[in-house]
Length: 291
Image (cartoon, rainbow, N blue to C red; front, side, top):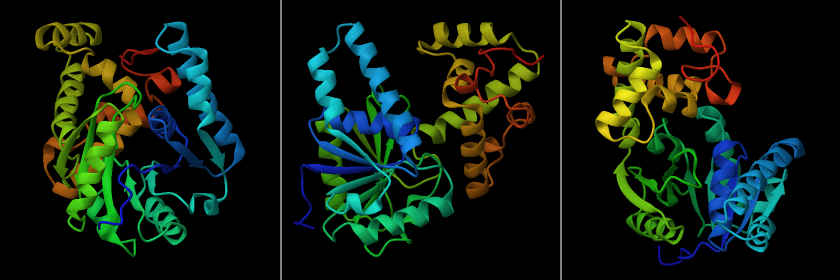
């Protein structure tokens, strides 16, 4: 594994949604060139606009200069052609949370990059070990789980699949540190570490809210002030996306059969009714809260 490029100077990101845009910005801000692969130019334009908006906010707050913003944007290149990531040392997959979709994408990426390249997934709910089986070099595959918003959240979980070579883990830890973030090495378990603990907590809060223990505002206020959290659990659910949490906790239940991961009835109803949280203005604390 000594042929792994320690600095990962040429990076590819697959997917330019919320997480992909945040990750691409983080990579570019570290001084690395990043090529982002998407299905069509419309998605590329939307992702790039999201990065620009985030950076413009930083300029307005005095966190970076206009020249620094432009330099970051200049390091990000969008493409719809998978051949354009052929020279990448590292590819970070941040596509939709669907196992079949990810496996197909990862196999296409592996066919393009060299044998010395490392491929990682940003999945928050799927088995990294299972996804690794889609690749010809599974020992060069791992999880690199950023949290939303990736630009601001300091912790990144480095997920070791059963097949992952230890040198890959070491290189990824160094990479995360070069981003100015804090790596945490974890085993490949449903939800890894943070979400493994977070999902049952959020499920309990949803059920307590549905049972009428307190209003959504009072629940958030109590847990923020009582536990010193920056966000209350229902605010956090809106930010994460109710549909995203429902998918993640359901995946964890299917993998473990542990009842603590079963989606509460209210959550399933809200997702079915189109309440997805902040991203569409309908959630527990966003828009009209269901009675």
